[in-house]
Image (cartoon, rainbow, N blue to C red; front, side, top):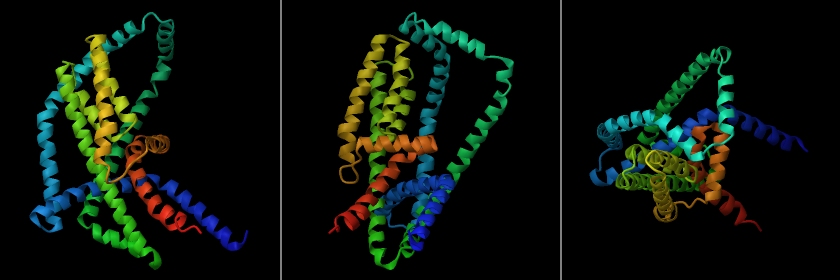
Length: 333
């Protein structure tokens, strides 16, 4: 090993360690880029209609989102609050119902006894410090979300300057390829966000309509959870199905089976027809790649890693296609 190889290896190791130490900063920055791309899609659509300057268009988009969100909350929030309170009241009944469905199992008394043995004053004392830790984590997450939103607004205000900065930081022979790579990443990420937003909205509306027709309690809350978790493919829709099924179990096992059939139909419609149709011109993610990315980033970064795993895979897939395949593999003699 010569001195140059050793220097390159040490540099790569230091960069890897620095990236790991700054992983939360990089996560916030990437989340801001995702939000900025979403804003940029809306800005471009509005500018085609009105031809306003970008700052004015961005302010208009933010106001539309703010007032639209406030209007939606005004319509849905009272009913959601009522349903969440109802869920809290029905939770003990739901647990009892699940126990009755499971039948007389031998581990339940042992479980109750073990829980009783675990509850003591010595074990309860650290609970206050744990709650403070959770509160601190929630406050830290809120600060990160605010910083992400601020960065996204600044990026959406002048994306051209940030794009030119990245191109200027690239060696001159590769600047044309870098410009193409950034354009392709922007196109793929914007298309993925638009497609998934339409898909999630459709799942929310169809789930709400289906649960309402079946007269399932907490239909709005369950549909909202199903719609939001559509952004987490593979894992999200399966986890979202548990809430309406559990609520339907309070009424009857037959209704729970009907809810399961409804969710299976909607999941297959979304996964095999709606989402591929919406994303056919942008990016096509293999389920195995998506699930592996979610599990890996979830293990490393927790819930934020799971939420940002798919946008990151979209960008990496474009990067692999443009750099590894076109610049290396296709030119291999």
